[in-house]
Figure 1 (tube, one colour):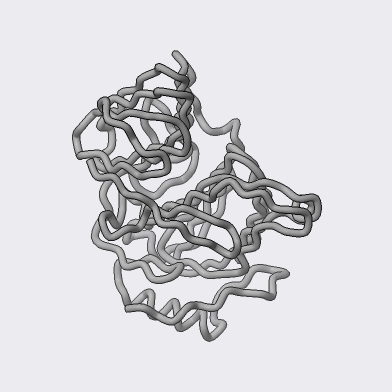
Figure 2: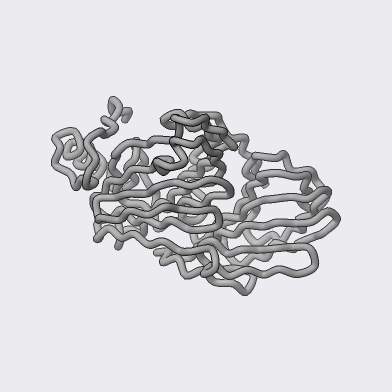
Length: 287
């Protein structure tokens, strides 16, 4: 097993922890990017505001534990995302979106806590048509027994299957465990990793550092134990169909696609989000 300690970042004023990508591990199944949006209290008149920005070659999945986010994109989507819901956006060849605290909560003050991940699209879908879907909490399947609750956010596992339209074999599950419970993690997917959000947990008797990503060995079926009330997620799936290049908000199997996307965004030759004027300019290319 490999343990990855996330690096602390700040995204437009929202503090995060980011274990993926790292020098030790570039991807786990289709997951190429993992942001833990840390518990943040926004005073009245403040909130998260990630201005208009582009994507290619990936799907974004936002899942909140607390607070709300307004998602708007160049497809015309305008959705308030609540805790326990899935906001799923597939970029295809070109999409732009914004994510911000809804105006009412911006005015009153609010708290935010959640996760956002990126899943690289298979090569056959990299340059496809963009898509957005919203999945209410009640549509996500849950197994709740013996002090353990498993919610399948996306993909399948533990005899559960999410309605989120993933593009390749995927595992993304939220796991809530009461004190002194145990869970066998099956080898249903070739690549898997555990991220502990809160609580004291053991993997095969060894402590897991909270807010670290533990990449599991292929084929192993370790036992996860909760020494206290605990909260974690499992991610994984089939390996990517080849290496991916990541540059800013772009993911592609061919670096030429990234160069093309950067040039188009810089030139303003990109789909826009209706009603939005401000945008995030691309940083200097780092090749």
